[in-house]
Figure 1 (tube, rainbow, N blue to C red):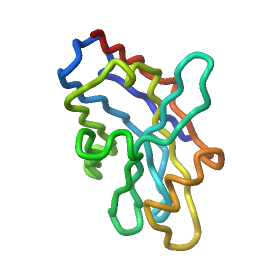
Figure 2 (spheres, rainbow, N blue to C red; figure 1 turned 90 degrees about the horizontal axis):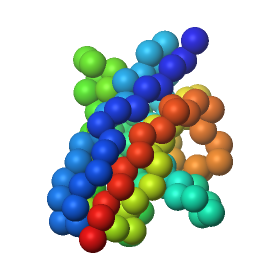
Figure 3 (cartoon, rainbow, N blue to C red; figure 1 turned 120 degrees about the vertical axis):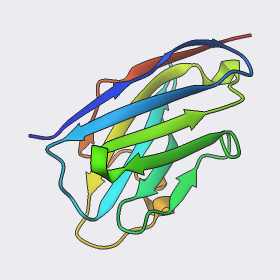
Length: 130
């Protein structure tokens, strides 16, 4: 049984930093995607950052490029999102997700497939105050 558990969310002032984590258990896919998504009340879910587990390449939404960094520690089965220079508009619930694939895929492909992910965590809230 696959389980994704996020942690590390919280409240921070604008300009601050946070690192959120996602521990994946029971997930053994060698190809596919892992990513971070966010959804604020009344808004559609959007892709934030993804990583191809095939190649390790990463992709980011334009709104977070240069500020957020996605990374993974395979030994710990953990996905991270380092968020710097946070803005009030980054306030949202952040979700970790995984999408296993048969073929090699790119991180850009992963970012575009936000509705196709098979596994989701319960989310961690990030609140940025001005």
